[in-house]
Image (tube, rainbow, N blue to C red):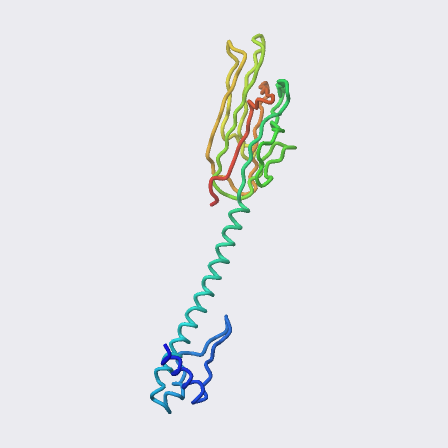
Length: 226
């Protein structure tokens, strides 16, 4: 170790050679440059000369590696940001009232407005209109559960239609039978495009009822973006 140190001092000071240590991120001396003059005038110092050239190569290698790692880090952060921005999930119920109340029947079709929000990640569900607007294209999971309670003397049914852009994707229906409670559930996985409108429609003559037990729910979330 002592001999190596003396060798470096000999090359640097006796022959007036300056070691070209560069600041981080600056370009180092090219390894293809002409041989350092100390090797021409003092062959005994060539070991120090070769060591210096090797140090230059290592410095350039590490600088290039740091640059590549910084670029990879930037790309990873961008991907993570895009993933977070595309997250979307919602889960809502018809209402949260203490006593049971019903929506319908009506003489025409109506959109069901789910007013109680459990989750609205991304704020893409509008509790004022009952419509979920798809933020980004991808595969989505959608689920609807309906429930109705009517007296035996009324010929009503619990029914609804899960819709995308006004077109029925999955109908739900249970005709009124001997009991007074009707329910139905639909779960689908569908491809949706950014800007699509997802909603649940109540057909004419149908009814759904709910309270704080949340018998009527509407849920959707992004499985993966495409």
